[in-house]
Image 1 (cartoon, rainbow, N blue to C red):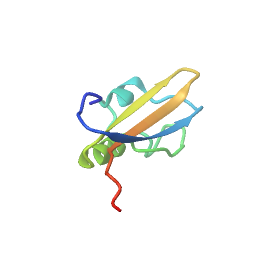
Image 2 (tube, rainbow, N blue to C red):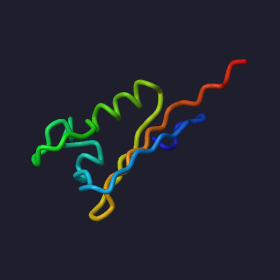
Image 3 (cartoon, rainbow, N blue to C red):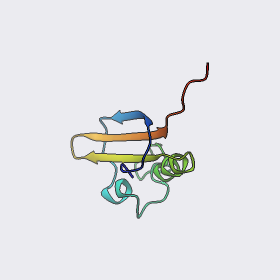
Length: 83
């Protein structure tokens, strides 16, 4: 998705907790990761983040690994300022 033409505004959110599962970061396997996790924690629904980004004309990336937590980057189309 990073090859989409145009200008984007990027918002990044990160944490230092347990990383997302590789299948969830890749966009498969777990459609609503974080709604109800096995350890009782509540977190973002990654599928909803991707859907919001896509519906807005942008995209999202999700990265994580052992000891690094998770980074979610939301890329939304830049809109010229009106004067």
